[in-house]
Each structure stands twice: as structure tokens, then as C-alpha cells.
Image 1 (cartoon, chains in turn brown, orange):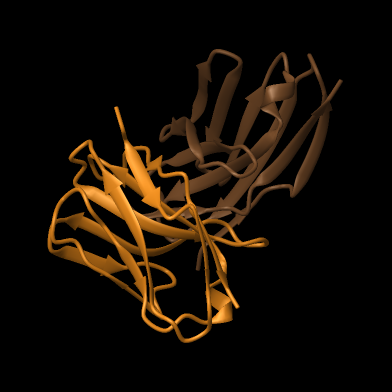
Image 2 (cartoon, rainbow over the protein chains, first blue to last red):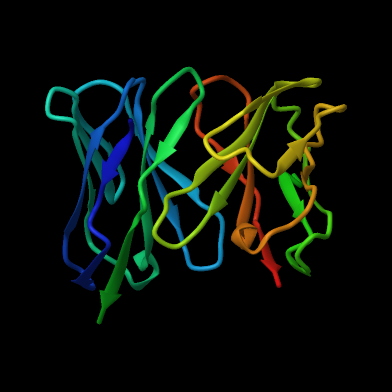
Amino acid sequence: GQNIDQPTEMTATEGAIVQINCTYQTSGFNGLFWYQQHAGEAPTFLSYNVLDGLEEKGRFSSFLSRSKGYSYLLLKELQMKDSASYLCAVLTGANNLFFGTGTRLTVIP
Amino acid sequence: DAGITQSPRYKITETGRQVTLMCHQTWSHSYMFWYRQDLGHGLRLIYYSAAADITDKGEVPDGYVVSRSKTENFPLTLESATRSQTSVYFCASNSRSGEKLFFGSGTQLSVL
């Protein structure tokens, strides 16, 4: 079976740093994606990790530990526009992407 | 750059009716996908297609039919809609296996 766990909701302050965790147990692993989804909109790609370690892209970074089945998304210098849901997804096969239920982040002034 | 478009944006239908959701992409991507998104569930894959005339079932295919006669179009049909199919449906595409997905804006379907 496939399982991805993420916190349901998080709140953070504008200008702060927030870390969104994702743990997974899947029957296969070919990489892990993070997507951002604003309310009422489509998901958009944020990051991809296939090897252990940290991938940095501007204010956003994503970390992967394959041995621990663990990833996190780090958002720095939070802005109000970062209020959105963040979806963790594992590529379990060649093109089979399994999604977690998402973490809804609220950024407050 | 039109990208990937879905229609209609909103649809209300009745139980038992047939309804078709449209998806069109202009990138000539080989792979296209249909997902549904419900509270308490992640995005769940309904069907996907690797190329024209090649389709395969995903995690939750029951009650749905797809076709792909042209690379750019991937319609999803609910043959006899049920209330449990009330959901937001997203179409997505990518050019190569394992690459990031590009999503359409979604269709919010209500089955009464």
C-alpha cells in the first residue's frame, strides 16, 4: 500500500521560516515532488528530489532522506502570498504520482 | 502559450446523467492524466494516457471512461453520474515519464 503523511494545517508569521514535513511509505520510489496549490486553483510545481540532500531554489528548499522515508519543504522570508496548500507527492513508478492530502499553510501578519 | 485548458469550469448535473469533461493541451505532451481532488484525500489518479490511443487505469477508475484519439485531447466521461463523483477534477500533462506535471485549472463537478 501507499501512505503519505503531512500535517493538515500550519500557521506562521510573515517574514518567518516554516518547515512542512512529509513522511512516506510506498511500494516504489522514483522521486518526491512538492506542489503549491492556492485555494480554487491548480497545483503548480515547486521542487523535485530524487537523491538525498537539500535542493535550494530561492526562498524555497526541499530536503529528502530516502532511508528515513522523509522529506521537508522549507519556506524562508514568508510572504502573505505563500498562504496555500503544499502537496507532497511520491513518484512510485515510471509515471505514477501518489499525492498526500496536503498541508494548508496560513501566513499571518 | 495556451498550455492546458479544461472545460467546463463548473458543472452541475443529476444522478444518472452522462457528462463529459474536456481537456486540451497545446504542448504536444505525450502523457496526460485525470485526477480528482476531494477533502480528506490527496489528488487521486483516475486514468492516464501515454500517447494517442493508449490509456490505462489509475487508482480510482470505476465509473469513468476516457479516450485519446488525438494527442492534444483527453476527455473524461462519467457514463452515469453518481453523487460520490462530486469532486474537483484536474487534467494534467507532461512530456516525459517522471517529469513534473502541468495542471489545468480544474472542473468543479456537482452531482445532485
